[in-house]
Amino acid sequence: MGSKPAADGYDVHIKNGTIVDGTRVPRFRGDLWIKDGRIAKIGGRATGVSDQVVDADGCIVAPGFIDLHTHYDAQIRWDPYCSISSWHGVTSVVLGNCGFGFAPCKPDFRERSMLTMVRTEAIPLAAMEEGMLPHWDWETIPEYLDSLDRAPKGVNCLQYMPTASLMIYVMGLEAAKSRPATNAEQKEMQRLLHEGMDAGLCGFSIQRLGPNSTQADFDGTPMVTDTMIDDDIFCLAEVLAERDEGFIQLTQATSADPNDPDDLAFKRQLADIARRPIIDNVVPVSQRNPRTHRDRLDWIAEAQAEGLPIYGQAATIRTGFVFSLDEWNLYDSSPAWREATTGTLEEKMQKMADPALRERIKAEQDAANTLFTQTQVAVGGPAHKLVVQGVARREGLQSYVGKSLGAIAEEEGKHYVDVMLDLSLETDLKAEFLGRGPEFNVEHMAGAITESPYTIPGVSDGGAHTKFFTGGAWTTDLLTWMVRETEAMTLEEAHFRGSTLAAHAAGFKDRGMLREGAPADIIVYDLDELAIDPEWVGEAVYDLPGGEWRRVQHAKGYRHIFVNGVETFADGDCTGATPGKLLRHGRG
Image 1 (cartoon, rainbow, N blue to C red):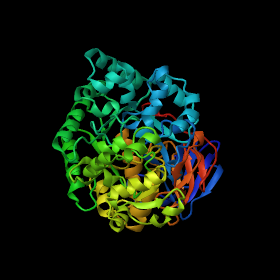
Image 2 (tube, helix red, strand yellow; image 1 turned 90 degrees about the vertical axis):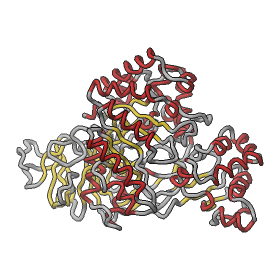
Image 3 (tube, rainbow, N blue to C red; image 1 turned 60 degrees about the vertical axis):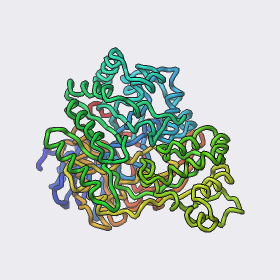
Image 4 (cartoon, rainbow, N blue to C red; image 1 turned 45 degrees about the vertical axis):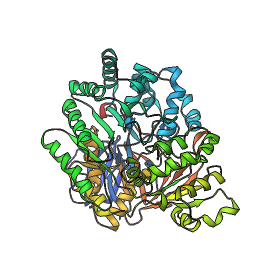
């Protein structure tokens, strides 16, 4: 590991730490030096003085985490650090997931473009209007990337081509939602993808969840890509194959069966055409049946053996959901619930009082073989187990707080859906319900990562659904729960999966591991003191533009976070430095 002496010394010396370099090499005690944003030296003795000395005695020194699935596309314009992910050791993020974003976009479509994110990703319109719209100086993808490059950033970022934005730009909104692309339109989409890739895009992304999408548009209709036909996707894959670069992020679940052969056959065909890596969101995990994730891992292994570079990503965080029906959207795969929760507040309340619509909601809720039932488990557990968290300070309703909907229903001889809707109506839809999710099975959740060489943790959805949950804390939960508390995963494996393998699958160049010459994206933390504060669902803070609020969970135990060799957080406090870079083609 020898290196030339630094003629003018070093910028940072991290000494006495336990180094976990991200390559699965067993941890070792040693020093590390940073110079000009890169790791200049690992191990040995100092060959020059350093401007800053960090004593990492008792701490882990590791590569920063890479968060492959985020929706910080708007937030990064007012929050350079993409919190809460950056608070929890993430130093690089990928933007434009699920086909959603803000470019390319014609000037007269900006408002509608923001509206597409209001329901599907639950990003408040007021926050986007105040925090992003004043900085909107682009139409094309090259212009957008130049704007993102100029913007201050506390983390590094890669950018997909948001396929929904691309289709709307070429076809118009109504056509993109109602019909396949013509041959001429396909050629234009290919041309624009080439143009975007030339400018530095990392590939393209798609959410395809069918006509009853779990994440619908603001008016309840499917998102553009939800009903996109295979050929329109394949034509974009041809661009990556022709260039032999880029990768694809795909969220596809058109069947109630997570291992549906038709869905999997489509993914194989897409991989065969693109011949580029596909990030498959997500590896399904059952808390009771290990075959659920193992069947998917077996399928990924078979694809890889045939030369099809498909990687799985799995959600590893234990999180609950707190929500009220005034803004809730994650029951959208139920047509009846979607109808009840779209429109103005007054329209929603009127529909929720309609006996006929209530009966439809109950029927779909109770049906055991629907996608809604499976999705429901993923977003807080069965509805009858939801616990009343708050009743908008209504004194006459305080006795319900802390009770489950099922228990209240039994006491009052009502259906639990009626209990939920009645409480909501009595509070102008502000009653809050807590879904703690299932009893999390660490063996199965860790197994979805460690039982395959091709799987990656994460799926934070950072920047989205922030009034409901805090997925950006997944890194800290991974280290505290799976590594420290249960030993279901080694520390070396956690950093390999969360940094090195993530970088490899997503096309990051020279990042994801600690090695001499690599960019210095480094976290220093005390594993014993690592914690999420507050636990479970976080706290509400009014720190978004437009007077909007979100739920956050702070991180404890991270002593130092460096991005490109510059400290961005010290003991949880932001330094104000913005050394992050737009990684065009994964480089920077």
